[in-house]
Length: 498
Image (cartoon, rainbow, N blue to C red; front, side, top):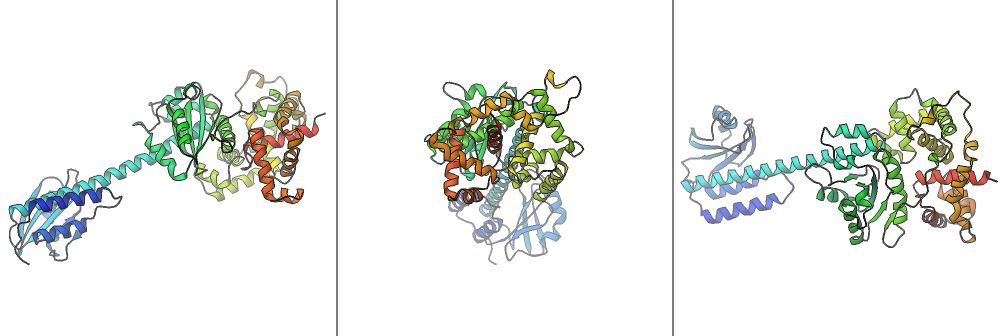
């Protein structure tokens, strides 16, 4: 090896800055090996980088292998912060050591040469060490930012899921004293944005404030549908003459992106977020068929709230009583499985799909139902919706009369009026084929292929008629969830009503 030479300072500094810029733009670990290889060519010395525990992370081929072991006492002082730099003689080598960064244990840049480095070479070593430290710090910042972003996403999802369960008090406690403005709102609207899956995180991150929220609103990456971004917005923003804040932003995103669509719920108290989400879900199905791709929910009040309160509660509690001894998780799995695919339920609750199936099997055995049957699913969904309604003074009846049948509840004036209003748009001559397809579809347990065989038409025609029904009924029907249950009950009422 030749004696170290003095490099041309300006050219080397330009190269260091170029390497810093190149590495900073890449989402990768700093290339220590490439950087010290470049430094070796500039100063004709061998270099190593050791971590805070004196373990070699990278070294040029000629770096003397026993040097790290020989200098362990000095390295201990450097890594612990007691020394900033040191030069020691190890056999025929003069070894220059510089600690990098401020946080202990600190990594150390070691340079071994047969003779002392020139002043210019020493300065270039220090500059190279600074670049290495900056790159490591940038990587740490990126890692911490990514970790914060993931934690903020999980936190927002937890707040949303707590609201979906109707538990505003727990949602507020979970914020640990820093209650977001959304939870202070008397009413909120759910905006459900359909966008490219890769856009969801970008949108949520771009509009996130320093507290992890989105101004007065909340953006949540849907854990079930990869193309859905759930946005909770205070009702006063959503219903302003010119929607502002997050509500205005979402509308502008849809206007500017032809593949986006937006469904908007009516205002609801935060405790009724689940009902608001259901409405936004239905509205999104309609929005995708409209030219402007934006739709507000236009449906009627839910059936559960229209039935006679005390008889409906007795029926619902009787139906669900076999679930009382079961864990709360079983109830939650069942409630979610009535509206989402089982894989989605598993993702929502952080359990395996096999665990979801096991819970549902126990529910089927306890209730004597088959959850593959759309009518059974609709009945249980209605019972759960009735049971989750806010308490009323009427809920404590005198005496304990027997529970009515569901047929009895659905024959009441309120149910008949609701069903007639629900199906009115399908009663004209033009849409009778759509109504007939809906009936066959329910009989086929929402299976489009079986429906097509029963009617002697193509599956494409079945789906086209279901799309028409979605538009006329303001319900999503192609995902066998909320909207399907309403269709089941409305057709049952219509078939029994005089």
